[in-house]
Image 1 (tube, rainbow, N blue to C red):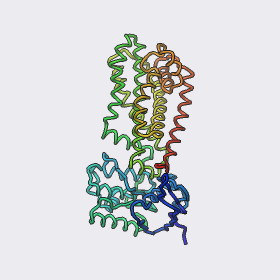
Image 2 (cartoon, helix red, strand yellow; image 1 turned 45 degrees about the horizontal axis):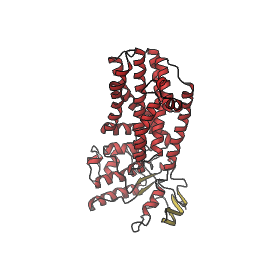
Image 3 (cartoon, helix red, strand yellow; image 1 turned 30 degrees about the vertical axis):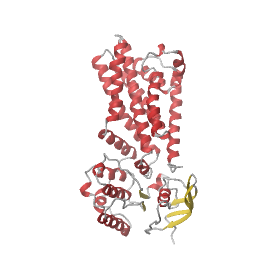
Image 4 (tube, rainbow, N blue to C red; image 1 turned 120 degrees about the horizontal axis):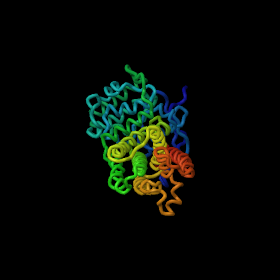
Length: 435
């Protein structure tokens, strides 16, 4: 007799003083269809969340084919439809299926999946324009997108009428009867996970650009209304002032975008679902960095155009290349800062900290004034801030102004610390969404 594919061994799960599961053991073999029955609060959804790696058991063990379900390689083996999914409203059905499918080595062809769940007529419609029942059918279809060995469906027929329920179960039974999901059009080349997440972020930004436009236009407004009128006529001073606004725009584009976006995603049902997909921190971080580069380009370009066309600012070609490399370093550091805030803070805290921290770091980094004219207390702290090191690095590259060695050393320290905080926050969330 073969070993069970899914196993819970004396599993308990508590939420404070409430015991949701108490010494539960369950084994499910290959080819079995198993239903969990019980009243509300009996622990059905909690057990499914444990199998999906969304929570850790208080006691006992849960395994999929003998492996921890929280590990990305294990998550390639199963698909999940959580009780609540909250699919992103601006995405189209076909885009969403493709997004999930690209996480798996041999996904089901989109046309096969759409046909099985009668979603073909809806493939070009945005999720927000679908009824609740239609959205639920999409959520169930996503569970089968990766050609899984096991599928967990938590109340899959919620919001469906009788006819739609029968159609959904017919599709599920058909997949089960075949053992393997058929695919006549297996993708020859899959997009890398990092590019998948970059594309996701850019699609959401394009379709809801309000926050990005605000972040982009603020540094430009500061440059035009405050910096340039007070910097004088010296070309070197104008070049330096424009360069500091480029750093300020990079700070806002990365920290302002990622800190609140990631914090909001972590607290959403869609963010919970994403944690069931087989992807680790590295592709997410690389995807966010690539997205950050695009955001930085959009934020920096207007400032560069104003500086080049309407001021006396000038940078030799050789220094321009060095400046681009320095700006890349700044983008990496500020992206790590945004990720660290997003993965370690709640949404409310991230919004509050972001609104205060960005301005404080900009002032301490010398983005609004000449560091030589800073008040004593600020000047004493400034070299220890990541913004001072990035500002010095960019100015040294573009203008030749000497950089503070202490500020550059601290920039390296901050890079390591922020990367460690990001990794710690990400791992803390795995299987610990609720205490």
